[in-house]
Amino acid sequence: MPYSISQITGLNFGDLTFVVYTIFVLVQIIIHIRLKNHKRIASDILQLPLSLIFTRLLNIFTVYIPTSQNLGIRFIILTFAIICTGIGAAMSLSMQIVPNPGDGIVQALAERFDKSVGITKNLFDCMNLSITLCISLFITHQIIGVGIGTVIAVVGVGRVIALFHHIFESKIEYLIFD
Image (cartoon, rainbow, N blue to C red; front, side, top):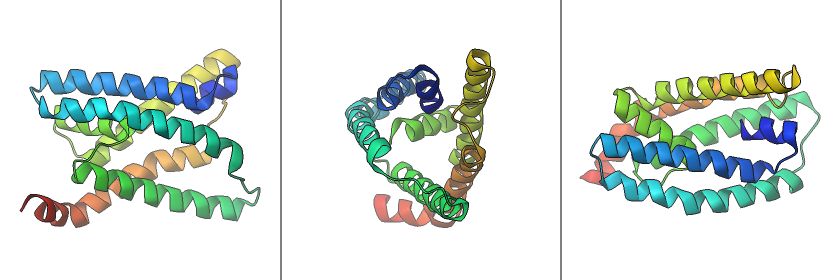
């Protein structure tokens, strides 16, 4: 969503991502207050400085990391990124370290609705994709900043999280909590 809005408006991608992440953190805090899970609120708040650092790095990476025009190379990079993102999200959530706000809100929603993190991630990403498409089509009458890679990532990351949790969650919990 922030990428599409930045492409439409010319606003800074990292700054827009920080605004969205701040909204995600506020929603997490509300969910944790309602669930009376006050221990999580400190972790929620710690996501803000993490987000600030991440979004500044995002600005740097957006400018300096080259992209290939070769479709095969782009697919390999996309596959690698989906796997790494899914495993990283699953591990940070399982180990209960400070997640990025995109994963933190998914975890809070999964707790709130008593669903698995993997399926919640897929539903949350589909919702964000739908909002992005609506914004793009409403403002420009065309799809901006969303391609087949985005759709593959929306499905893929949640499935990698679900697979990782299925295989490793009990082992991670054993290592951490026993």
